[in-house]
Image 1: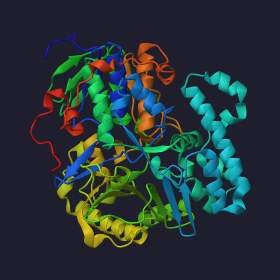
Image 2 (image 1 turned 180 degrees about the horizontal axis):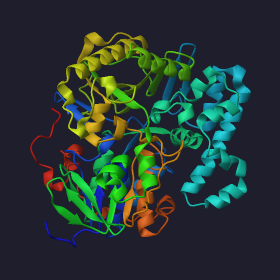
Image 3 (image 1 turned 60 degrees about the vertical axis):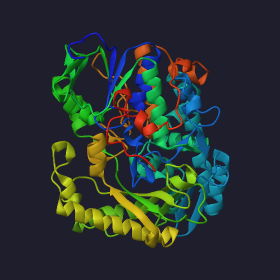
Length: 563
C-alpha cells in the first residue's frame, strides 16, 4: 500500500460515531475512504469491553433518544442502508426513562415535553409558573433548532422569532434565572447534567434543551449495546468500498499550501488523500496533529490552547451474581442536595483548599442488564451489570501525576494514582449503596475507569468524554469545516453537541459540506444513499466487537469473548 498515492479520496482519523457516519456517507457516495483507528476496535466512547468471559460493559452508550419512526438517528442509519441492522429497545417512556432523586423529591421523567412539564410541577407545585415559563421557552428553542437542522435557513428562523433565537445564544443558568426558579427547581430541571458534563452556567441553553428534546422524543437502548451500532456503521463503510484499519495510529495530518494532503502514520508511512476528516480530539487535532501555528492562524491556536474542557468522569463498572429488585427501566440521577450547583461548588472548594474529595455530590446509574434484558453478552441469567458515574476535579494533580498517557506518563502503577483510585471507588460504592441498598457482598466484578483511562483510549484532552466547555467564549465551538482546504473536524467538540445523536449529526454535516448537498434533510425525508444489497450477511456467531476491528483484523488474536 505504501507509495499508492491515488487509492483514497478521503481519510478519517479516528473511528468514533462521527467519523464512521461521515466516512460512511462519503463511501456510499462512491468515494474511496480510509478510516484509521489507534485502538483495537472502532467506536470511540461507543465501544464495549468484556470481562471474565461473562460480562460486557458499555463505555459510553447509556441511552439514545429520538429513535422512534420519525427519529433522526434511524434516519441517519436509513440513509446508509443499515436501519434494519440496529434494533432499539424502548426504555420506560411512560413511567419515566430517567429517575431524578434529591433529598426531598423524586421525578420520573417521561417522554414528551407536556408530560415532563406535569411531572416537574407535581414535584414543586409552588414553582409552577417558573416551570411553565421554562418549558415554553425550551420548546420554542428546541423546535427552532430542529427546523434549522433540517434545512430551514437561520435568517428565516430569526425573522420568524427573534426573541426565541436570542435565547439560543444564552446559557442554561441565564434561562433558569430568567424563569425565577429556586435552587431546588434549578436542580430538578438540570439534574441530567451528566449528559453533557457542565453546570448550568457552563452550558448553552440551546444545547441543554436540544439534548432534552432528543430524549423526550423517547429514550432507547441499542440491542446488543453501543458496539452493535458501531458494527453496523463499519459494515456500511466496508460494503461501499471503504476500509477500516485498527491499531493504526496517526502521527500527523499533512498540510501543504493551506490544504490537507493526507496523513503520516506512527510508523512513518505517508498516505495521500485530498480530504481529511479528523474525529480526533479537536485540541489534539489543531495543536499536535496539524502542528498549531504551522497550519492555523495564531489567534485560533491560542483560543484552542486556552480552551477549558468539560467535566472529567469517573466510572465504576459493577457486576453482581444477583438481580437488583424493584428498579425501573430507567437511569438514576441521584443528588445528595436539593441545591446541585451549591453542592458541586462546595466539593470544588474543598478540593482546592485541602486536596480531598471525601464525598460525591452526584451519581448517575446506568443498568445495562435492565435495558438489554436477556442479552447473552451483558451478563449471565440472574446477574446484574451496571455503571456508576460521577464527576471529579480536572487536571492530573488530583491523581498525583504530572502528565498523562499521551505524554508517556506510566500512570497505571503509580502509587498515588492507585491510592486515589481506590479511595474514590470505595466512596462511590458506599454512596451507591445508599441509593440501591446493600450489594457489595454479591459483587463478582468491579473496576474503575478514570479520566486517565479515557485519555489513554481516545486521547481526549482532560480525559473528558464531553469536549470543550469554552473555546474563546461560553458555548462557542468550531464548525465541521476548518480554515484549511480539505480538512474537516467531527466529534464531541464541534457545534452539533454531545452524545451519539450530536456526533452522528456532525458526521452527516461534514459529509454534507463535502458533497454539497443537505444530507440530513434528505435522509430525514427518505433518501437512501447506501445499497443494502451490498451489506454482508451475518452468521449465527456474528460478533459486533470482531466486526469493529475491520475486515483485515477480524480474526486477529486477542479478542475477548463471552462464554
